[in-house]
Amino acid sequence: MDEARARDVLAAAGVLPGPAGRARLLALGENAVFTAGDLVVKVGRDAELLPRARRELAVAGWLAAAGVPAVRAAGPEPLLVDGHPVTVWHRLPEPVRPAEPRDLAALLRIVHALPSPPFALPPRELLGGVERWLRLAGDAIDPEDAAYLRARRDGFAARAAALTPRLAPGPIHGDALPRNVHIGPDGPVLVDLETFSADLREHDLVVMALSRDRYGLPAEAYDSFTEVYGWDVREWDGCGVLRGARETASCAWVAQHAPGNPKASAEFRRRVASLRDGDETVRWYPF
Image (cartoon, rainbow, N blue to C red; front, side, top):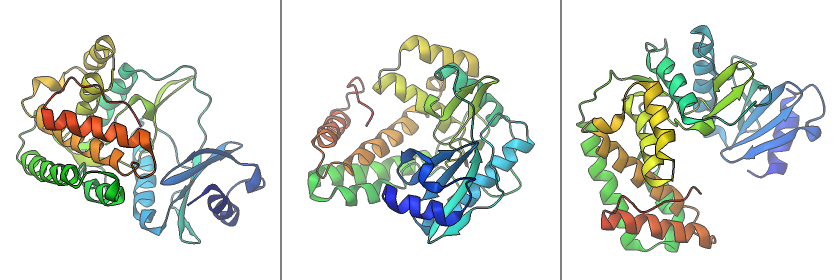
């Protein structure tokens, strides 16, 4: 779905107060995200994303009822417009500063204290996209690397299923990074709710541990995260398993961009080589 197609859907949806052509495009990926006036509109890539859009709105309503600082939906149900799910959200005020790991930790403490919602949340399928991403990579990656990642995926899936958590399982954000926190005038607000899941709470914490170890997050920033949350997931003997699973998924995710993109191809080779060598000190770069 390109921008022109997304704008056609936006116009057909008729959810904005003014002409759709004047809406500003914020992001273009699985969703095209537009803003105009006090609203934000997400146009999904295809009809397969309708259940996820419906669940994201349900999560938003549940968080609002629980008083959790999170983005608020402007409508209770998604629209299906020309085969694309469309959801409407209240626009947040301009951020007063960038989000920091400690802001994320404060919100995770609130989310992790919640009981299960009155609707079903899926498990966190961390490794579920690996096969699709490797297929999209095609001949742009070494077949031996693809086979290695498939075997690694299967091994970590089995090990993760056998973990004994330290924290009580329950609702998690699923993509717990500072980029999914908005700092408004009233404080931190949680955004991007489509990955909410019901699984090990440790999933949300391993993300930041991996950011420290692989992506250059300063140690003091990570320490502020664990201090506010109240626990360092690296103390848990299952941390390496969830970290390994996430590294496997992150490596395969980059592979899908390798065709026609030399930078992605180089980053994929860097990542898979470090996994093969067992070198946890090799720096990975966001892509």
